[in-house]
Length: 85
Image (tube, rainbow, N blue to C red; front, side, top):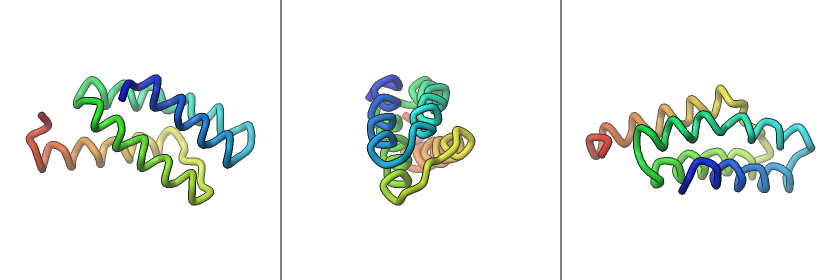
């Protein structure tokens, strides 16, 4: 999954679940997805998007800082389990 696609998917999910402020928040995730794509691959981007989407389904709207924390966890798990390859 490409970073821009992940942002678009989350924008759609947030727009469907929350108010207009959600759209602006989702756009703030782009640097996080780009960082994950640079350090890992599309699977890691997808994992971050999935974790954020789960939060949205639960009625939350993660901040960009919370998205960064989620990304850090995904990247750390990948490094631990597969050497970050």
